[in-house]
Length: 216
Ligand code: G6P
Ligand code: MG
Image 1 (cartoon, rainbow, N blue to C red):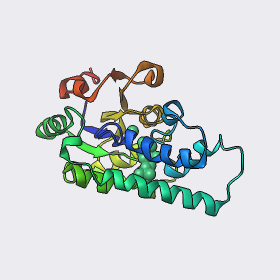
Image 2: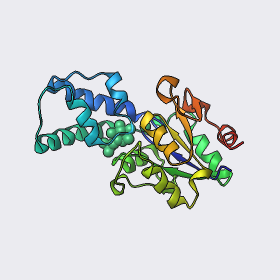
Image 3: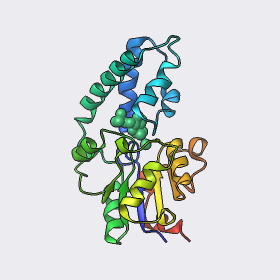
Image 4: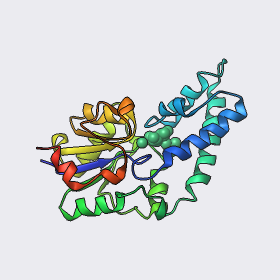
């Protein structure tokens, strides 16, 4: 039985996946490191520090911890400029309606984002009060594809994982949802999210009926 839906943020609630890409791309260009949207796919759902490691793989040199800290700070400053311009108009299609419809049916709604910027993004979107539980990424030991963030959100909601559905745009996120023992909804294409229990091309296709349908 569906009792809770736990959402990823970047690329599901709003298209910050694109803003992360733009901020990393600017940094990679400055450093002369090749970086494109294909490499960017590997950064989705992955922490800031791990994202930098993936970008630096192609730099052909070693970087000190201090250099890496300076680079992640630079990227985050640029990223925060970009998210500072978000407004409620940047919610992805159907998300506001879906969350309202779920809550109306008494289905709990949670957030499992790896982003330390999540509170600012929710505030910009006017979505600060929509989630009954927001898992704190600073408090988990392992990021996606480990299930920890999703399990923590379910625990905060008081719902067993087998009664939860998770919604994700990243391969690492779909893997995390499945490892948590939840039903996984992928937003995107089958080449990356083939493991999802339900695959939809866009958030506009999400509905309470489709989510309930996952539980037979
Ligand atoms: C999400 C995004 C990742 C991002 C991570 C950390 O999981 O999908 O691309 O690296 O959050 O975000 P942050 O805002 O803390 O740098
Ligand atoms: Mg995402």
